[in-house]
Length: 194
Image (cartoon, rainbow, N blue to C red; front, side):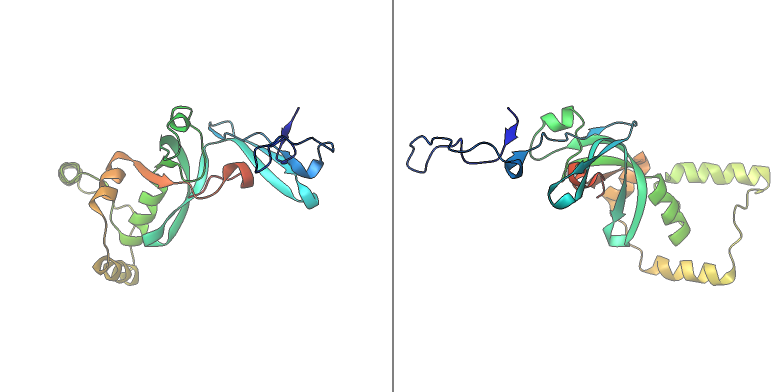
């Protein structure tokens, strides 16, 4: 039969039945939902829509561009898990990527940026850092990774004055997974960004 968005098959406002006095039209069609799944086998289909325009229907995705609003930074990262969906728990169980779903993403790209921008290795446990220092002293502190110029050091120190980091986010960095909300529509634009 096909999915139809017309009102020919619906009842009148009074409750009476309507006779279908014309056949179905192309402009009244509907398409089945994308139900984009979380999978490493990325699959995006091209769909020709009205006016000769194009939609991209993502069927399987595992990466996306995620932005950290308060730091004004965006990084491409891997989606690891779907953890919450306000509209339907079934979408969490089936790992379906839809707009406004809460997902867990890999923290590594943001961790890397934070280290480069603020000079702080975020999410590293304090005890671990202390034990590392001891081992480095034992080795003779040979691992001087990057020598920073005086200008860069001053710049990083200035940034650190205004640095604020929520305890919850720091905790998430510790686990290596960040919670994010999908803001794009994977079934319409073929991307899973948030």
